[in-house]
Length: 133
Image (cartoon, rainbow, N blue to C red):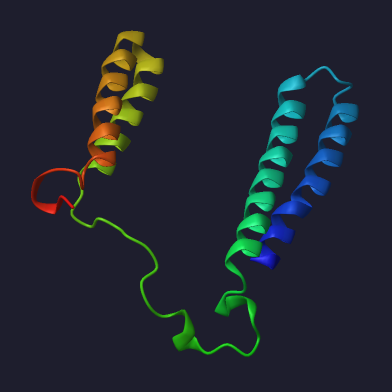
């Protein structure tokens, strides 16, 4: 993960000067752009730091070594639920929240309640039912 951490870490050194240049070009009258670009730089720095710490903790992956073989990266990559409907419900509730901001704020309350139910359902999916462990 060394290359990924350097790539995202370099984003800080790119976005911060861009934000300052943007501020000078707009004569510091448009603060949303400056703040947005600074936040993107901060986010790139946080992702780079996370990848750097994780890379030191888990060691070199096959993708990081030039002498690695394809079969070294084979195996289980994580745990995914292909039969889960909760991500769809959560996505629809987020879409309903944005729809509520556009047409009526009361829809946002309904979508927020549905989002809470969907998030709890997704988190506790393997704690009950057929797939409990």
